Image (tube, rainbow, N blue to C red; front, side):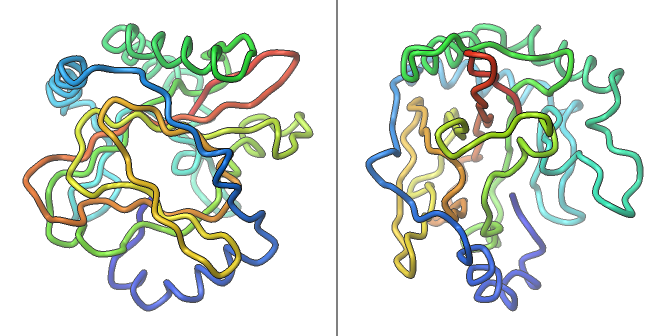
Amino acid sequence: MMSCPEANQALAPALRQAAQAGSPACDFSSVAELAVLESHDCRTWQDQVLALRAQWTPRHPSLPFFTLGLAAYLDFARRGSPPAPYRSPALRSHYNALLSRHFGGLLEACRAALSAHTGLVARFAPDRASLPGFHIHLPHPVFAGEVASVHRDLQFRDVFPEVAATRADVLTFTVPIALPPGSGLNFWAAAEKRFQPYHLGRMLVHDGLATHQAVLHPENRDTPRIMLQGHGLRHADALVLYW
């Protein structure tokens, strides 16, 4: 997630303090990396994302931050907001069909990896939730700073409000398919900040409930940052995958 960099610089300490209050500490032993893609596979999927630029959704008024697909944290209505794109069956159907058509092999590789990792039958729920999609950050000097929001992944409360989930029932996963050097995640455990690097083609899995922050383009290179992003929720003896 990303916010306006000027505002985020001023609010970062307060955001971190608020996010840490009552937040579970990061159990670093529960952060896993799963081999999903080879480097040549990443290039194939990167080219596919870039070829679909007309389908990207801009997520910032001036910076090159986009998504491909609907994301609950961005597209679910909040109180006083306009109608939520995420609640539109037609829009969900459009993007889910697009993602299935162009990235079916990638989504299946992720589903199989998560099923093997958790021991649960992993499945998608396109009738009510968005398929995992993409965060896209094109190179920009601002992204070398700590401009991404400090947050926890609580989207399951919006998408699946009927499920009384515990920490053991949820996960967040990210697969880098185009990766600037030094990109990763900051995690907070109490007052300690720890950095977890991303590796091309390797799925990073964590529960999403510890306070964390994306590190975007720390070396300000020309490489775009393209990440397949999704979440999982254990429900009815299955792992439901969505974004």
